[in-house]
Amino acid sequence: MKVVVLASGGMDSTAVLYETHAKHEVIGALSFNYGSKHNEREIPFAKWHCEQLKIPHRVVALDFMPRLIKSSLMKFGGSVPDGHYEEQTMKQTVVPFRNGIMLSIAAGYAESMRAEGVVIAAHAGDHAIYPDCREEFMVAMNAAIQAGTYVGIQLLRPFIHLTKTQIVERGGELGVDFSKTWSCYKGGGVQCGTCGTCVERREAFIRAKQPDPTVYASTPPLPPRPEAQPVKP
Image 1 (tube, helix red, strand yellow):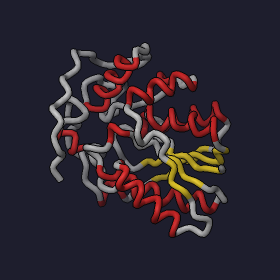
Image 2 (cartoon, rainbow, N blue to C red):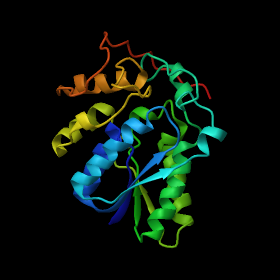
Image 3 (cartoon, one colour):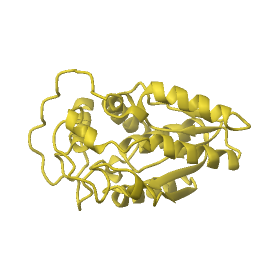
Image 4 (cartoon, rainbow, N blue to C red):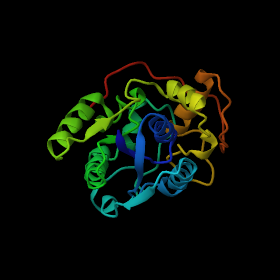
């Protein structure tokens, strides 16, 4: 199947890029610069991996998002909280309908390129915090993309039932160089090691029993995972 992959330069999208490359014909990868604190740190890694796999890579500038959409993830938003990825405070980093916006653009690009599918790296660990990463949303978005394209483009989400730990394990099997990926939402010179995404990254390597190649500014003891509780809308 000819597909287009959403490639942010993070761990998940990089692993899914290699996963998809092994199974499909990847005719293009898209990175979106939507004004987040870490876009400029992660997008070069997406470009690097696409070059290794000889996949055409494009960066799409979404200049309107910082003006219209509020989130602590944005350059001029509030501070990115430290703590566990599943804490309620991580809701501050939600960028409203981000995946919906990006998938709409990717679907148009895919049809223009005569592709048959769009691939996203949404995974099981995202669901509680991010509404537009949940399978319920993905099913609806898949139906919308298929209904809105002549060829019925499919939304593929091969990692939707995998945990971050399982993604690290699969990436290891595929030979992914995770040192050339970016997770930290703060977007500093090195990954901070204490924000929710850094905590999740560190935890995943420990649970996967694989060496973590990441340089962190700080590696204090990992915070405990919060007790399971529904996320308030």
